[in-house]
Image (cartoon, rainbow, N blue to C red; front, top):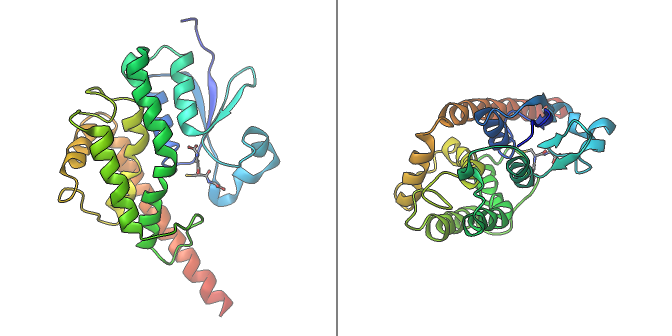
Length: 232
Ligand SMILES: N[C@@H](CCC(=O)N[C@@H](CS)C(=O)NCC(=O)O)C(=O)O
């Protein structure tokens, strides 16, 4: 593959959609410049950033010639399609590839269950996307689908090799870890999968994410308390 020019990666340090891309581009040594967009300061709502992603969300990438792309799973697949990366991440074989695509079709709505469960345990923080129904039921339905439909008897979610699917969703398990959700009893297969993913070099990035996201949540709670006290 011809030399590919560096791209800009816009991300936020505790965004679970950004972390997989951040990890992946460093792991596969893709030439890029990471640009932090501070969501707390509203940097995602500036005219400059809205010109990149009109939805005002991270992650997004911009190629050197100005080509723009957003939506994390689309970005990950595009990077595999345009750069020379090991085949396991997004296999060229159509049937193997279809398994990763299938996961991505399922994944976007499914991630809502992780956030909903986390926010149900942190009621002082307003959840921007409230979920109808019982958060634990919704979460466990989602975990059940992951275990029975995707993992089945495989080592990873789309085959016996790690792929984009595994790194895409692992950071959402951080939400569960942060509210001490115990995975082993009801979902031992998923616990085994999580251990296998974290036995790879993604572990330091995952652990850093847990620490930083927890601190971010605590800071946010303090901020909410302080503004409530001020308005009294
Ligand atoms: N479906 C999007 C979701 C991205 C997303 O929700 N990003 C959040 C941060 S985790 C964001 O940018 N939120 C800012 C906002 O919605 O104003 C993707 O997969 O890239």
